[in-house]
Length: 400
Image (cartoon, rainbow, N blue to C red):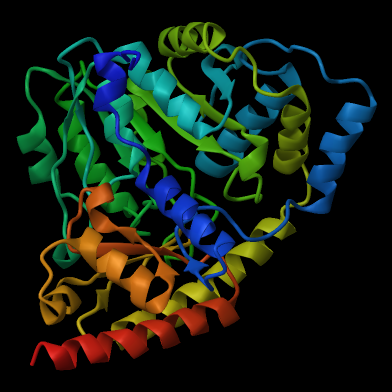
């Protein structure tokens, strides 16, 4: 007998990034020398002073429930961070700490979307956005930006995507999967469109703010468009910048009424984030930031090398990113050389022939691409390019 599951659960797709990581792990357990570039997490250990703060919290007995929305000290550190880095002022009642920024965004979708409401998600997008919207009974609208426009939508595209049903817009800069980041002028132009639609709530996912190397300083939407303050939720976390993915701490600041609703939803799902993780996050935000700069320097070096290497492969084109630890390569030429129309089949080919696991662009709303995480050593990246170079010329020759 098969037990039924809800229609809602049946609609949701497994995360393609987690699926690739799981498949690579299975092949490795079978003795195959697979290199996996699917996981989106830093390869560095959590900095010692941050880890020590978490251990100290456990040893001090700080292992009980906290306030659902986070401990006061951490909320104060988040308020100081927003003011220091982004010029945005919040009060404690406007800040929510969650079990990772993924939960923050899920809370936001649940708090503002009613059945049939539309959420604009520029493509390429992070794989989880559309499914979160779906779980909230919303509808995703995905204007697409290709490599010819740097994977960034234009104000004209945003305006065209807005309807009477639009309730939420999600912006991610720097972007997972592309590494593209909107300049202050580009954000200002998008803001000019949103100003004309006062019912729309905006969520800005700034998770990769600190993994960034463009010439212009990082800019958050509210920094250039303070008039959107009353309906913008600024989202961030400690996972990427401080190599704390497993600690599960995300946070946001925004209008009190929406933050309160998000906190109520969180209170009926997970309640508070882990107490000791909150103490570690407090040490991350208030402590020495040199570890962030060191990791960013390494990611920038890997990006520069990998971007050039990918562009040297037959049928592969890769636009340089402004941040994150992902390369998003256009592989439509390589797919044609292989006689393939499906990027999933192309990535399966790379896994079988080169023992390299990457994520197909279709999962990010951009067919004909692949995402590679360079959160690994340079030696690993060099080996990956060697393997890809060995199989792609051969495939090109066969198609001649």
